[in-house]
Amino acid sequence: MFFTKVFYEDKQLENERLELTDKNSLYFLGPNLTLRNCTLILKVSARNLFFDGVRFLNCTFEVKQELKNHQQWVFASLKGCRFKGRLSGCDFGHWPGYSEGWEHGAIEDCDFSEARLDGCRFMGCDPRTLKFPKWPCFTILEPIRRAPELRSVKWPGEFGDVVVENLHKRPQSTVALTLFAPAEAKQFETTEEELKAVIEKFDFIVY
Image (cartoon, rainbow, N blue to C red; front, top):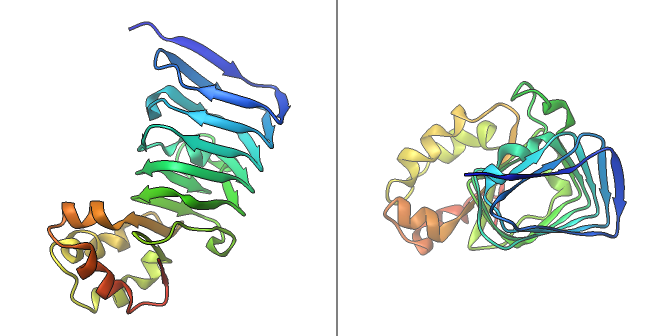
């Protein structure tokens, strides 16, 4: 399949609307690109979207189709941005040694309250500056350090055996993990209500 390559690089854009929606295009953002107060409409899969040292300042991301397993966020600096739509398996922030370009990764003062996140990790940042989505999403803060406490209780279905038991294997820079209860309940043979009953016991889980 032939793809058209679209490049945004070596410039500063302000108050622009970028529609990254063509399934037959590959979008390259960066290097040396700064977007300020821009709106980005995303309606392509992760394999169509590449970041390289791009800076997003006070931008809004409207994700029109679920964005799955998009690790490219860790090559971008995000400050004061808002996210809307569904994202799963995405990583944000500062992940030392992940891959070439990791040094550009950062996230602060961003708002995910209008997004639906599942299996999304936040790396090397201060999660207190972030607004996470509410229930049925829930966010485990400092999952690696808190893993022993989480393992000390009985979780419903297979959630404990699969998710909780393996938290310590996450990258050391992971400071928060956001999950979507309906998807987790379906995958691990439990219910949202049973998950919530355990989640409520921990003050380091945001929901």
